[in-house]
Amino acid sequence: MTKHGRTLVVGDIHGAWEGLKQVLGRVTLTHNDVLIFLGDYVDGWPDSAQVVSQLIALSKSNSCTFLRGNHDIWCCSWLTNGLTNEEWLANKGDRTVLSYSLINAEERTRHQAFFDGLLDYYIDEEQRLFVHAGFTSQKGPEHEPFIYNLHNDRTLLETALAMNGDMPSTSKFYPKRLSLFKEIFIGHTPSTKYGIDTPIHAGNLWDMDTGASYNGRITVMDIGTKEFWQSDPIENLYRT
Image (tube, rainbow, N blue to C red; front, side, top):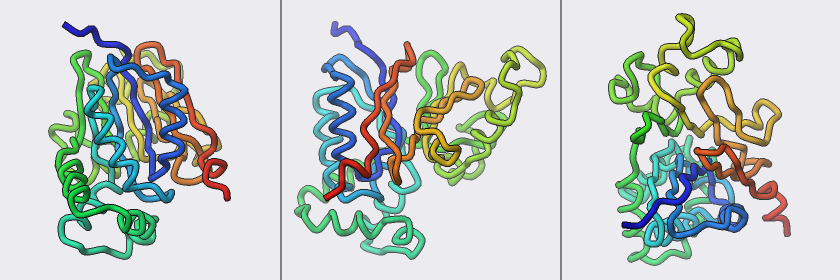
């Protein structure tokens, strides 16, 4: 029986293959490592299609769990029916469309299957939740009345940030949504929004989106030790 190595959670990538390649090199990945990706693989830097191809390849050598982000939903819809929308294009979807001009039909079919197979959330055996954005139901993501929230909610992070940092999880005032899980790992909201380019830790929640879509970095964390690795600022990797 193969022994599992580390469990690594990966924040938003946004088409930055150069950044993903760099940070995985810094992690010194082995085939025993388990990876959990929090979504938003596309829209941003020029290599969205290449990122998806490389993730598919990585899943052949490592145990990988891929979650669905809001940008992935837009891209999947376009791959499925060929239709774009103004909101997606305004959020750098145009760069994703351009990246697919270099991908043949067979590879596009593999990509569509990849997007179709993404998970909306994942709960591991230690009651740790992994979700792209958040949830609003007091009973947890499986009871979320609007699936949109799993990919777009920011109130879970805002709740964690607003509470007293010294509040024990046993307090009757501890937010109900947070108390459902041992730990929660999210992406979606860039830490750079708060002037931070490292993961944000609030309560039992970790925000792993460290601004790769703009001038931030891609981050990978060992969820057991909380050691993390980062790419260089993505804009530095794509300067000509």
